[in-house]
Amino acid sequence: MENVLAFGDNYNDIEMLQSVGVGVAVSNAIDDVLTIADFVTSANVEDGVANYLESFL
Image (cartoon, rainbow, N blue to C red; front, top):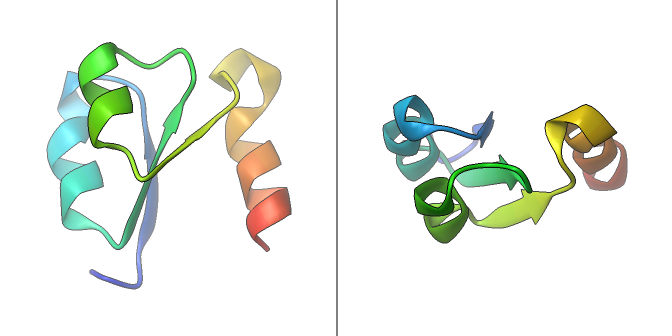
């Protein structure tokens, strides 16, 4: 799991983000997700996941 990258924005994503190597939250995520994320990218409506992947890869 340490080689896994995951994205999340809500309560159901917290456990997933905590169990992977890199957890990324979109900027419009709930505060609990923003707190535990390793990185925060732009909002999902602003292509946050795509933007992060483009910069990461």
